[in-house]
Length: 140
Image (cartoon, rainbow, N blue to C red):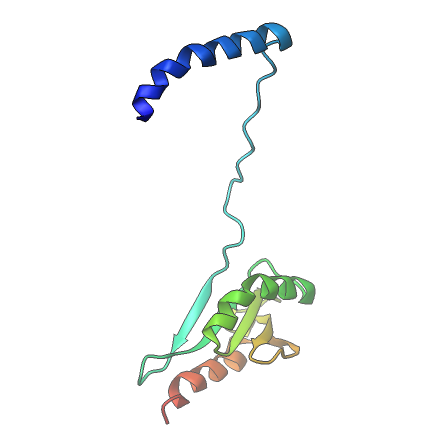
């Protein structure tokens, strides 16, 4: 039925367009919206699973753009639906800072689920045992 209506509507549409253009002018061209160069709002998340039952036991969110507590809190708000839905302990980790070898560099770490913890400045050797304990102690 749509195909039958198109030939009948074309002359009406063309006449209406012609009348509008002669009365109001052709108008100005519309610029296309600027496209962002990179996607925004994508934050890497590591899922940690139990070694025995393979159930999700923790989330670690890498907030590489979050250099202070306020930016970590912004990331926490952005990711809230994700970690609340999974309902497992969740930490946000900011970028590493300070010089020296990578294992000695500190990063801001903020626990956001199930309880909101204080901002901590930890090295990997201080943080990793927490995650490893969740993965190994889950089914014991």
